[in-house]
Length: 128
View 1 (cartoon, one colour):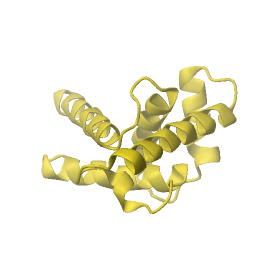
View 2 (cartoon, one colour; view 1 turned 90 degrees about the vertical axis):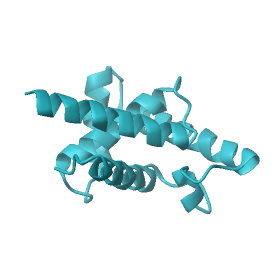
View 3 (cartoon, helix red, strand yellow; view 1 turned 45 degrees about the vertical axis):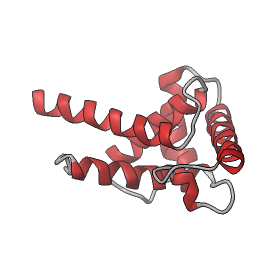
Protein backbone atom coordinates (compact mmCIF):
# COMPACT_ATOMS: atom_id res chain seq x y z
CA UNK A 1 0.00 0.00 0.00
CA UNK A 2 1.44 3.36 -1.08
CA UNK A 3 0.10 5.21 1.97
CA UNK A 4 1.78 2.78 4.39
CA UNK A 5 5.04 2.94 2.45
CA UNK A 6 5.03 6.74 2.46
CA UNK A 7 4.19 6.80 6.19
CA UNK A 8 7.15 4.49 6.91
CA UNK A 9 9.51 6.79 4.97
CA UNK A 10 8.23 9.83 6.85
CA UNK A 11 8.61 7.92 10.14
CA UNK A 12 12.22 6.94 9.42
CA UNK A 13 13.08 10.49 8.35
CA UNK A 14 11.57 11.89 11.57
CA UNK A 15 13.58 9.39 13.65
CA UNK A 16 16.79 10.31 11.82
CA UNK A 17 16.08 14.01 12.39
CA UNK A 18 15.53 13.50 16.14
CA UNK A 19 18.70 11.40 16.50
CA UNK A 20 20.80 13.79 14.42
CA UNK A 21 19.51 16.82 16.34
CA UNK A 22 20.35 14.99 19.57
CA UNK A 23 23.97 14.55 18.54
CA UNK A 24 23.90 10.76 18.20
CA UNK A 25 26.83 9.66 16.02
CA UNK A 26 25.46 8.24 12.76
CA UNK A 27 28.40 5.83 12.50
CA UNK A 28 27.77 4.17 15.88
CA UNK A 29 25.88 0.91 16.28
CA UNK A 30 23.86 2.76 18.91
CA UNK A 31 22.38 5.00 16.18
CA UNK A 32 21.06 1.97 14.30
CA UNK A 33 19.81 0.35 17.49
CA UNK A 34 18.09 3.56 18.62
CA UNK A 35 16.40 3.85 15.22
CA UNK A 36 15.12 0.29 15.59
CA UNK A 37 14.07 0.81 19.22
CA UNK A 38 12.06 3.94 18.41
CA UNK A 39 10.33 2.13 15.51
CA UNK A 40 9.51 -0.86 17.71
CA UNK A 41 8.07 1.25 20.54
CA UNK A 42 5.97 3.26 18.06
CA UNK A 43 4.70 0.03 16.47
CA UNK A 44 3.85 -1.36 19.92
CA UNK A 45 1.54 1.63 20.44
CA UNK A 46 2.40 1.69 24.13
CA UNK A 47 4.82 3.66 26.28
CA UNK A 48 4.69 0.88 28.88
CA UNK A 49 7.58 -1.09 27.46
CA UNK A 50 10.31 -3.25 28.94
CA UNK A 51 13.42 -2.77 26.82
CA UNK A 52 15.15 -5.96 27.93
CA UNK A 53 12.09 -8.15 27.19
CA UNK A 54 10.25 -6.34 24.39
CA UNK A 55 12.80 -4.33 22.43
CA UNK A 56 16.42 -5.52 22.79
CA UNK A 57 15.72 -9.13 21.70
CA UNK A 58 14.09 -7.91 18.45
CA UNK A 59 17.01 -5.57 17.71
CA UNK A 60 19.52 -8.31 18.57
CA UNK A 61 17.88 -10.73 16.12
CA UNK A 62 17.51 -8.15 13.35
CA UNK A 63 21.14 -7.04 13.57
CA UNK A 64 22.73 -10.39 14.36
CA UNK A 65 24.10 -9.22 17.71
CA UNK A 66 25.29 -11.86 20.12
CA UNK A 67 23.49 -10.67 23.25
CA UNK A 68 20.88 -8.20 24.49
CA UNK A 69 23.67 -6.66 26.56
CA UNK A 70 25.46 -5.66 23.34
CA UNK A 71 22.39 -3.74 22.16
CA UNK A 72 21.93 -2.05 25.54
CA UNK A 73 25.64 -1.22 25.76
CA UNK A 74 25.84 0.32 22.28
CA UNK A 75 22.77 2.48 22.90
CA UNK A 76 24.20 3.61 26.26
CA UNK A 77 27.54 4.50 24.65
CA UNK A 78 25.80 6.51 21.90
CA UNK A 79 23.81 8.44 24.52
CA UNK A 80 26.93 8.97 26.65
CA UNK A 81 28.90 10.54 23.84
CA UNK A 82 25.95 12.66 22.65
CA UNK A 83 25.38 13.92 26.18
CA UNK A 84 29.08 14.67 26.72
CA UNK A 85 29.18 16.51 23.38
CA UNK A 86 26.25 18.79 24.22
CA UNK A 87 27.67 19.40 27.70
CA UNK A 88 30.84 20.76 26.01
CA UNK A 89 29.40 22.39 22.89
CA UNK A 90 25.90 23.40 23.92
CA UNK A 91 22.84 22.37 21.93
CA UNK A 92 20.23 23.81 19.62
CA UNK A 93 16.60 24.14 20.60
CA UNK A 94 15.66 20.92 18.81
CA UNK A 95 18.07 18.77 20.83
CA UNK A 96 16.05 16.64 23.25
CA UNK A 97 19.18 16.06 25.35
CA UNK A 98 18.56 19.60 26.65
CA UNK A 99 15.59 18.22 28.62
CA UNK A 100 17.91 16.25 30.91
CA UNK A 101 20.19 17.49 33.67
CA UNK A 102 22.23 14.28 33.41
CA UNK A 103 22.60 11.56 30.81
CA UNK A 104 19.20 9.89 30.44
CA UNK A 105 18.74 6.16 30.75
CA UNK A 106 18.19 4.30 27.50
CA UNK A 107 14.47 3.95 28.26
CA UNK A 108 13.96 7.60 29.21
CA UNK A 109 15.71 8.79 26.04
CA UNK A 110 13.86 6.33 23.79
CA UNK A 111 10.46 7.30 25.22
CA UNK A 112 11.27 11.01 24.85
CA UNK A 113 12.40 10.40 21.25
CA UNK A 114 9.20 8.42 20.54
CA UNK A 115 7.13 11.31 21.86
CA UNK A 116 9.02 13.81 19.69
CA UNK A 117 8.75 11.61 16.58
CA UNK A 118 5.01 11.14 17.14
CA UNK A 119 4.59 14.92 17.48
CA UNK A 120 6.51 15.44 14.23
CA UNK A 121 4.41 12.78 12.48
CA UNK A 122 1.21 14.48 13.67
CA UNK A 123 2.45 17.81 12.31
CA UNK A 124 3.03 16.09 8.97
CA UNK A 125 -0.49 14.63 9.07
CA UNK A 126 0.55 11.02 9.80
CA UNK A 127 -0.88 10.54 13.28
CA UNK A 128 -2.24 7.01 12.95
